[in-house]
Image (cartoon, rainbow, N blue to C red; front, side, top):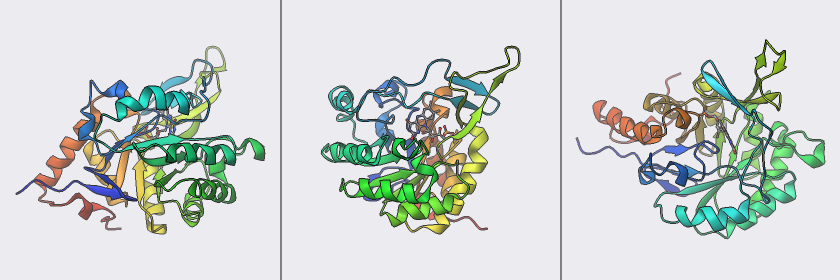
Length: 305
Ligand SMILES: Cc1cc2nc3c(=O)[nH]c(=O)nc-3n(C[C@H](O)[C@H](O)[C@H](O)COP(=O)(O)O)c2cc1C
């Protein structure tokens, strides 16, 4: 059998395979370049950027839990100016689509970020993290109210001609309603899920383990929730879905494709095995060969439910 076709396309972004990195777990790409051949990946999603640099939350801000981890990094990042000056020159040398994850505290900040990113030719797409607090609306996350999500996605949509991917939070009562709001605002694609809010307690001190008290839960333990949400959303909207949550191996990624995802992102697993994304690509190709599947796209949404 000739080599299977692993290529997929999301909103005009052509990827050699469906395996991308998840924001915040792969730095700005260069940090992992000695572990992973970045040109074997489908796409690189960078750490979430804001207009100004952000120091993040006080320590401790990471804790391991059974089947996963909690993080309260607090969206620490170098800011868009330093990204352009210090991180982009490396990314420019890599022949793989770069998707920049970003956020703001107000709708205007989101729109300004989109306008700035729109001008960078090396950026193939924008991924909006809408899980952060909307300072103008009393700190409720943009991603937890459909009307707020619609409005911020619309503002970004009008600020860029690049593909806009909206990253959904699982910390909502109805993820399908949120997906519809983003699709109605003309998002090109959705990625899900971001982390689930959790906490860890130190019994001896009777204190929260994280200085921030709560944190975002990620890793293998969240995979069943992520699969369920991807399945629900992919059936409900006409735009492509990127599946994220607890992927550590090729078979996990393939399950997301069956659930309706066109591509996947790998997050926490990068901390355990820095070369995991490349292994997933290799094993995905092997799976297709062994099962005589000529095109990975034949698996997208092929779940028999
Ligand atoms: C340490 C850490 C930092 C993260 N930073 C971001 C971020 O800046 N922006 C974002 O949208 N998601 C961020 N995430 C969420 C991941 O991209 C991903 O959605 C989540 O971890 C679930 O996938 P996983 O189970 O494969 O890790 C972060 C996750 C972790 C663990």
